[in-house]
Length: 188
Length: 183
Image (cartoon, rainbow over all chains, first blue to last red; front, side, top):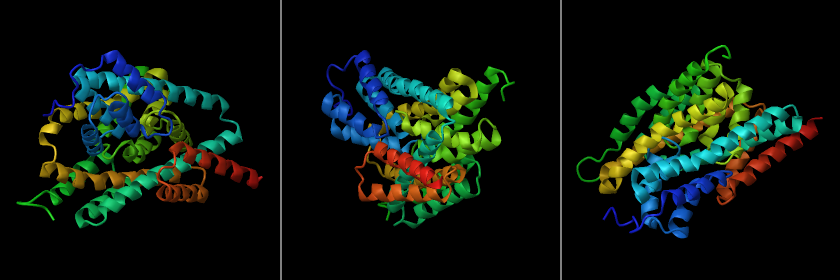
């Protein structure tokens, strides 16, 4: 059943590389996960809708950028480990080069006040995008007491007290998961 | 840091980004606060101002926003540094993901999966807020930046389909208007 999503003749690795390369290069402004979904399900029919949605859920739970996790999952489901490696490298290759080129260009032009203002404005707006993500997350968390405490504790520890991230996560994550762990039949 | 050998710079990039890769719960945005602390306050790779600039550059570039690591790596040790930082941030989490992907479908929908999701989501959200505060504290924008971030969040709540790039453009225009008015 788990193999149902893998087509009888999977696409070649070079084709996968090409598809993910262009997803990476053209993904200005984010929203890559939606694009991967569209290309893989609708455009090429390499996977079915439910499988990709399940991958998106997995990508959000696991550590790491959601889009690279999704890329690894999708690549793996289509062509195993080689597919995962191919799609991940293809996805990141273009953006890696482009963001450094943009950084170099900025370095040359940074003395113009207009560009300075652009950078400040983009940074503030980008923070707003993250703020929105945080608010959406908080709305889902808030109805439950233990997750709400975990959220506030994490924010205070890392954002206000500036404690180191790794130990904070290693302490709070097990407690937070344990607090919602299903006991017996079904958790409230 | 320039007197350090390139190799030791690569090593410190790995030492900083590999652990962050493995605890970036809820996506790349969740580790911006600790990346800022490491890069600016602990390692002294860049100034707070440069951090905000690199954050903005990563955001207008294609690819995930966590390519912030890539441009920090470039700033620290050139193209080699960009490559090392990219691998350090994306490879460890990808290997974990690959391992989980292999067993994921067998256990899909089990209770513990739900518990993992419900238990970890609030940590990702808390970290996201921490990143928001860390970057706003560093920026030159002051109260104007805080207000703009708030307005953007409201716009996206009101019109969730707004393209992120349109929002970034609004930010750039707003700050230039403010610059003109301040003259």
